[in-house]
Length: 339
View 1 (cartoon, rainbow, N blue to C red):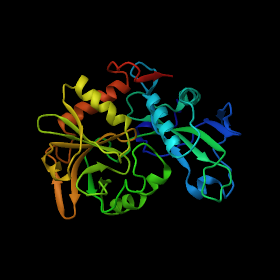
View 2 (cartoon, rainbow, N blue to C red):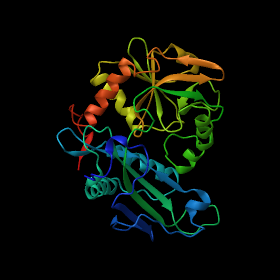
View 3 (tube, one colour):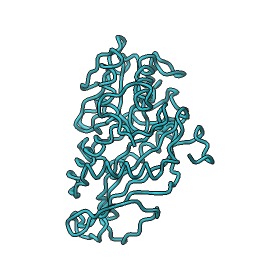
View 4 (cartoon, rainbow, N blue to C red):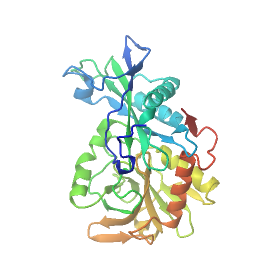
């Protein structure tokens, strides 16, 4: 391991590692692909990714377990979701088995950057694909580059698992893409202005409501919502406009099979949010981050879990999920890929 890194003080930022995986698509087929040491990309100013933002990406993590193994959490679902992104954006599908092999190669080559168990840090893996040839008319590229790099990271939100404050956004997060099946750079770019405004006003994130009626909860700029009822039922919003989060889907299983909770995926109306006992954000980067306060245009919603600590049900979900990821608890079959 890289001893000069202060693992416990890591934020969620980029630290260049030794290797990245690169594979190029030319003449209608993917090349062999492999590890490279060069972290730079040289492209034409007219490359399709610059002109029409033909790009998509994924995000997953590798962990060092309690017994010293290195594992990745459900990478097959990331491979499948990237396939959906490629199909939606008229990009050549990167084969799922090739995706998983790239994860193995990348993590093995950068094993020194996988943080030690117990530090709260992990190795974040970012696969992405871009259209690389020159395109001036509005059409898909003919050449592409798939890359996968990794970087050690700490908590996504400052304060780790301390509850955060968010606000109801005046902007529509989902309207520009209208589908939850893709994870494209353009979609996240649409949320940069609202999140900048939120940060300037002292909030960690935005709550986006459905663009059609602005009555139903959808997602934040970088994570999905979970809510807990007074009787301990996990509720998560159902919508065709939000990202199909792997963490959220996993939590539904964790809640029912490990924590003895009921789990519901359904439409969540904003009017019922004050009735929930606990609220949180979930995702690969966020893991589970508790929300203590939602600001709604002069009105404040405070959750019984308070602003100082994670609520009891959310904590149970967090400890169980991370226990599975770090090898403290047995994982459902197929959830961990050992490197």
